[in-house]
Image (tube, rainbow, N blue to C red; front, top):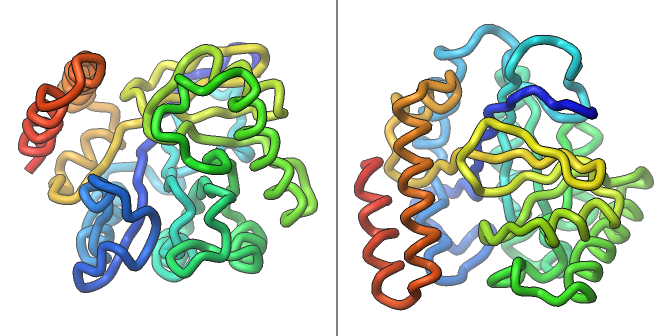
Amino acid sequence: MENPVQALSLMYHDVVEDGQWDSSGLTIAGAAEYKLELWEFERHLAAIQAALPKAAVEVVDGVDWTRSHRPVFLTFDDGGVSAYTLIAGALESRGWRGHFFVTTNHLGEPSFVNREQVRELRRRGHVIGSHSCSHPIRMSRCTPDELAWEWRESVRVLSGILEEPVTVASVPGGHYSRQVAQAAAEAGIRYLFTSEPTAAAAMVDGCAILGRYYLQRGMTPETVAAFAQGRIPARWKQALLWKLKKAAKAAGGDVYLRVREAAFRGYK
């Protein structure tokens, strides 16, 4: 894909039942804000389905990039066990498939998918990708050797499980840089999803860089549908909040916490 078209990618994490936020995925501070209860997730999917033409949700390894259209991708970070127990079935009931990005150091832990579940998800048509080995807090600050290891080792593990090349990944924590992309490309990754809310795609050393619009607990179905349809006001609003959060992260401390809290309120 030399000149990728635009794509609308939606970023989810985990789905749980009965407020059991630690039952799937990471349990670090702030992780639960990006986890949805099953009933809420189903409302999101229903809104997406109602907003889009039939079969509009696609996967990157099945897209005809020569067509003049803007595909919609559903992605799920971290590799929590809900990918297998809850999310995959909800997608399949609508004829959709998702992208599941696995943090390989956590494979087989109680709240994460195991090797057999990864194989089964792939057998059912979902895309399996890397989310690094260790989920660094700030991946963009890793050394070149650390970046190489995070991508190459995670790709090696997943490729061994699936017995096929793994060429898709997402950046943990939203800390993207060109060096992160270059290391991913060197590891054989051809599609790298970031956390930047944009539909525009770019190329770095033969790797397509795809932004994503993040979804979190409390967002209305109408907001989710707006992202899936690519409506400008919703996209611009999140892009602005993203820029403010990036600036606040650079400032650190209470500034970032206040901006993040305001961003959460903006979508309630």
